[in-house]
Length: 264
Image (tube, rainbow, N blue to C red):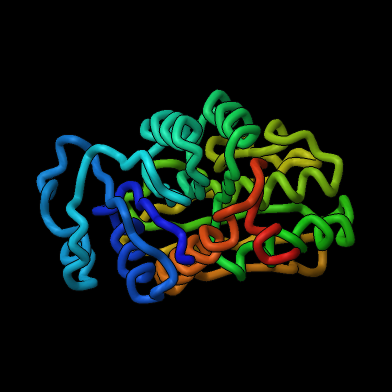
């Protein structure tokens, strides 16, 4: 039986692609396409808005109370309401929203005690492979290698640094004994910016329509090792999210990650 799917922020850049590829896959029954109450396209067919053809699912501001799984790529201010709705209605949740506060992350953990919940800062397979190895690589390189992370995204991205860059840094810190997030140095400016030992440099670029670029530089006197990931389009994030939604539907309550989905 196909899982019933709700897509939150369904008229956004990610939401439209999630709707389109979910419909194309034939693996879901789409039962809800949700947007904010003031969205100008409310009432219109969500499939047409997504370029997927007519789905007979209107864009609505009220979430259905019955579904198997909900995918949310929205904004941090919407996260609390999404968590509450999913817990109250026993709906599995895939959350790809980044920029969540510490309080909201605590809410995610509390919700996961009651529903199956998958939270990831990046849904792509390639990036999750990098997540799984970056700490080991940094540990193998050792403390003489300085660590710098550079990430680039489109001009509309609100949070910086990206959740993906923070996850890379957190994995490096855990594997090398650094205190996260205290070890982070966000950009540099001024007349006295000498590098402090054990820090991780973090740099964010916002320009044009860049989908997502991340590079981790490990450098010492004599050589530099760089591990990088480039997202060519949003398709890889969308396909990862749909893969996660299929995997998560019917699971017992718990906090899961893409590492679980991919068996990494």
